[in-house]
Length: 68
Image (tube, rainbow, N blue to C red; front, side):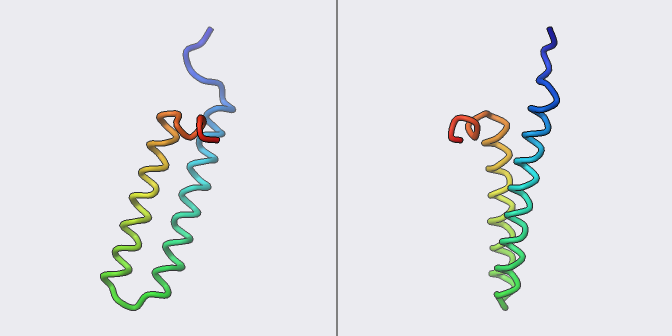
């Protein structure tokens, strides 16, 4: 028996993180494109970064599996 998870678990985690990151980046890019002020654009990208960090934390701790 191996202590490491099987490949499908790792691929599932990578897929969820890739999809979540892509969604956050696309949403932030669209929102930043609509804003003129640099301060609001910076805020949008900071929120996107925090959202990606939360996504990683939720998936790594297993909370995402319990919610889904």
